[in-house]
Length: 497
Image (cartoon, rainbow, N blue to C red; front, side, top):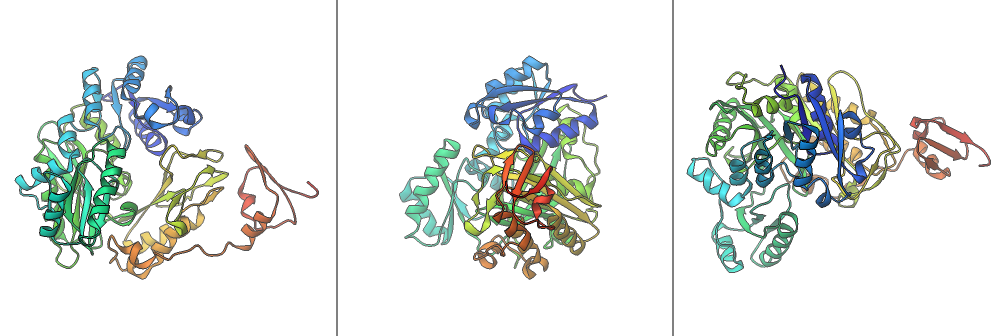
């Protein structure tokens, strides 16, 4: 018997589609919510029911917890899955869901609240004996932070106390740069999180970003599902993740896994979560960064090497079922995830918007694609520009890299500037292939990267007079047998048009 008969998904796009697939396998009906901009979105089409909740801006729709709870009551949903982003780590929303007599598919509100505040989380981890990055949390007047930064030693990271996802984070290399870093971080923190408080952490110039997946039930059972390496980042945001980490040894995995479990126990954690660490690759010393109280974007690679469906595990744990996993899971093979974004890596990763003229994801053994878009959809300024996640699984790391390179080559994505070519540059770089990339990899090795000149077919397509009207493209000009526009439905070359 499924633990619930109907679940409302308080999210959109790729993660909403992912949750719908998990629920279908479990025999659970789904309710989608959508903004005006998403009326024709894939997750709306796939769900058993769909409820409109407001205009396109997230503040008028996906961040309106009252409308989401009303939609759950209206449709008879028993539980709410928040996905990631939006309200997923909002303790007040989790409490409101519980107060409405519904089940929140995630950790308790108190755990979300305790771990969502970086200052409080650092203090909790220190008390639990979990190593933390040298830093300071406390009174955040500028003069106090300046004094503490000098004690910690430059360079330092200025971070939003209530933040995440790289927002409200600035680096100061010396005392002269600190005032601007404080002002900029405080401004962004206030805008993004409504909370301008700041903390300081020592900036580790050469570091690896490694996280551990946690699962915990309501009966005191808690385990980890090994690590994911997330060192390839731009603007402090991940773009490529893999598991196992090439830095890991059995001894280090044991130590970090035990610290991750201790961190979760310190706050009475239940459901799925991720403990993030920074690791000094020279000494293999590791430090707690934060704990994400939700499903991670990169969760599929853990699923590939463990065989555990993390979304289904979340649902069963939220229903009170006991954890049904061995104490320790050994990774099977190697998995890599690449995040495909509508953005321009050659211009500082500026987001791109516009129609998705054609999206043909790669296929084949060991390839998985999680996406919430189709050909004909539009990427807007209202939401995150991630188009898809391409995940590969192979027997070892070298095979997984080759499989991902092939999968990216086979991906057809027309109409938008994307990071597909940049992802290939990362995978082909000898430092990445050697498993030695740190969080400064892009800054050190690809900061001057520019895309290669387009092939002949693309140039000819650009010369054509292209008219896109829904599901057809008509061009005038000389026929080009290999033009990428032939991938489009109803492609036609005509003369004199």
